[in-house]
Length: 214
Image (cartoon, rainbow, N blue to C red; front, side):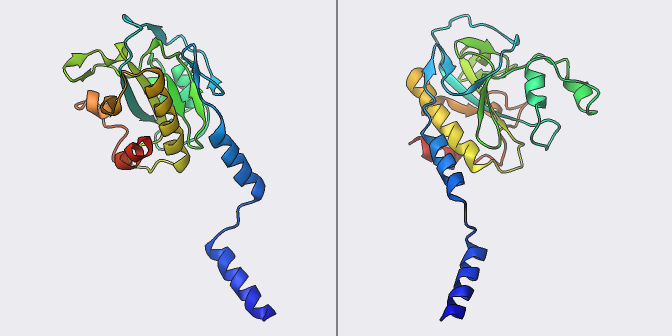
């Protein structure tokens, strides 16, 4: 009987890795953190200032949420290079690709990293520079009335479970705080700039994400 139990336990652990209790507790605690919005900023999220922003022409009209992806260098995750780009501090000598982009003045309101942590760069009532030349439902200059959220990722690489969860929670909070953003006003960068952009790409599971918003 003891031998049988040892074999069963070994088989179970091999097919079902045991996660330490403290990790489970930390994950559950993270899900319960209030991410509410106060004065157009997320509560309990890291905030990094960037000068890559300006005033919206009509601050009261925020009616679109645009989902992007970004990773620096391409197809690599981690590090502070996205932050450096959004704050105008990207060192062109670190990677050959950076020489092509370090002078860009771009930003997003938020970045969701691979582990699901969220960084806010621009208050939601201000205009971030994320959409570029764009239009949605016959209206151009999407930066004027949209919120841009970057997922750390690439078109062809699956996003993490933590990112879907963080994006869904953030989207729900934005829809609540800015009621002009409905399900039909949550789009990809490819939807507003189809000839220029492809993100969030084929790897982004839109049905899964929309089901999480239901």
